[in-house]
Structures are given as structure tokens and as C-alpha cells.
Image 1 (spheres, helix red, strand yellow):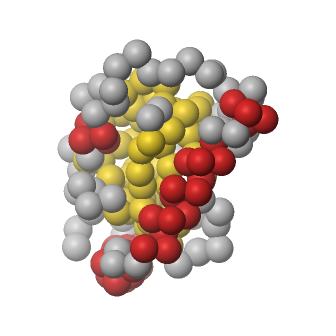
Image 2 (cartoon, rainbow, N blue to C red):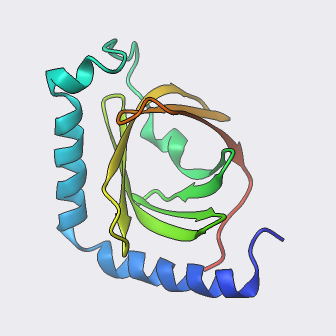
Length: 146
């Protein structure tokens, strides 16, 4: 199985942290300021400036996605929970135009933003605004235990 008992315990603990912090507007404000920073001209020069041809359907992100180094479940309420080899993380996610932002709770990790390159029912392709790294996520049938 992907998670051992110790990791499951940590994951459950982190999930409760998400619930506690989900009422906190601070994370939402960080996401908004991160999305605004992406629209600055000096940042836009590093990424594709093309506006999405159609409005992105944020609901398509809801569910579990796997890429080469993680499994992340994006919840409808804007929370996410993820598992990497190094451990579990939780946070908040949001979309503004074609920018996907993630913040991290309980860790000293800066919020991060990605340009959405492709999003459909089975594929979620993003490019890091910071370093241009591309992540290709595939939708999977997986739910973290609560």
C-alpha cells in the first residue's frame, strides 16, 4: 500500500490541521497576492502570455491526481492533501484565470503558482511560474482516509 500506518497517522493529523485552518482568511489572502504577483510584467515575460481560450472549469481539478513524485487530492472546499516520498503536506488551492496557486499549512514553505497548460477530465498539465518546471498529472481513483 502507498501509505504505512505511521504516515496515515501523520496524514490524519495534518488533515485536522487543514480543517482548523480552513476558517482562516490569511491563506486566502496569500493566494490572492500570489495570483496578483503572477500578473506583473516581469513575471509574464518568463511564461506563456497567451490567455486561455476558454474559461477554466475549476471543478475539473477536484479529485486525486498523480504525477512522477506525488499524489495530491484537491477538495471542493479549496483544501488539498498530498503525499510525497518525504511525507505528507496539506494546504489551500485556488485558480485565477489560468494561474493555479497552492499554499502550504503547518510548514515554512512559500506559496507557489503554476500556469495551467492543459486541464481536462483525465489530464492536468501545469508549468511552474518560478522555474518553468512542467508537471503532468493524471487523474486517479484515490481518496486519502480521514
